[in-house]
Length: 303
Image (cartoon, rainbow, N blue to C red):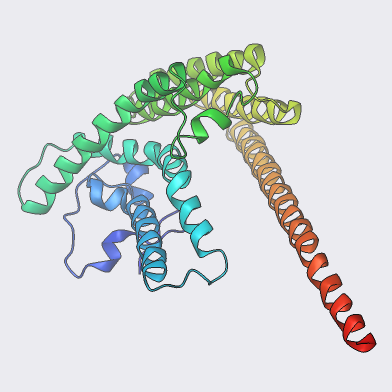
């Protein structure tokens, strides 16, 4: 099976037929980002299929009167309630890259290519409309279990900061647009990315959308690293000294590695705290049962 860079199985691997190999810019093509939407977005499609499959499987277990199986109902509810919107936020940029690469190749030779074009257009419309959907939902305070992440990601306590998720999504989409459409104009491409990063960095510093101060510092640090990396990349074409470029490349690698390690540590701590909380709750529920058993034993002895 073919694996993409994000370690999810590409949906193309499940079919014996081969998809047309449409061209894309060299660096995209080297990372298996071709001009075929179904191929490039295959890993994201597989993630959505896995989520739908898990929901159907759990629903089937519940229909078979398996309500007594521990936590099945809660797991299915958590998948249905918050996971779809979170998954869409995390995968919409990947879909956007795949669609933009598809639009660069106006080819409609076979059925698969036409289907790929149709899906790319539909997904792009959904992506463009999503920020407007976020604005309407947040402004009218239409909370549901499905869209709850829109209210908790930013500004859980401060309602005004909730709109920052729109800036977060727009920043990622604009960066993807600049990277793909301006690929063959590197100076303009990197200039646009620097402007986008600088504006977003300023918004993070002024608004501080997170309720937790540590999260705000982490977001600022991550965005500052991204901005610095893009600034360093912009230096490459203007200087042909190989040693100087090697030093810049080393600095970029260290910065990216550092932010990845910080992010991994942050995720680990969050998971550790969550597991710790679950164990605490489980132990609290388990204590009364033990005491009841002891009371029963004592009562049977005296009876």
